[in-house]
Image (cartoon, protein in one colour):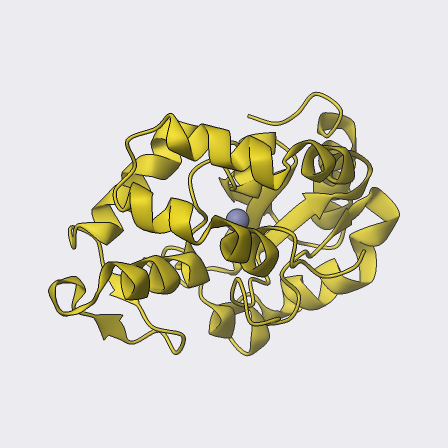
Length: 201
Ligand SMILES: [Zn+2]
């Protein structure tokens, strides 16, 4: 599922990739609030692995609520603040580069030195002419480096303009996400560190 203004550019990117020998495949596109809340709540409650900045698993039962929120935000967006809510952002990979019996993990090494490297090199050289860029191209101390996450340039800025700190606060306050009070107490910091803190186009 994609925003209707993204569809044509995405299909053009996909067909250009195909000509270059890559079967460009979507791992994840649109996700709504409740889907993101399920991911968030499961991590907060220790039902889904929570990782530190190096990818090492953390024990949720040993962490304060503040620490849990910070650890989750490194790898998963706050419900309401995920760019996947917009239909403009997509996690992609080249299916035909996967070794037999292996599925994509969405881990940086796959794209930097692993089986997805030829596709990632192609993506860096070609995505911009099709209207896409990498909002998490470098680690800015917020969301970790995500080479698989592309964003549609013409439509994302308008979405980010609408997602103000106040709009996010209203959405969280009217939800029942795990750790809600901790999130609300830190919301201005979370917004500047993890929501607006993306790479330039
Ligand atoms: Zn993503």
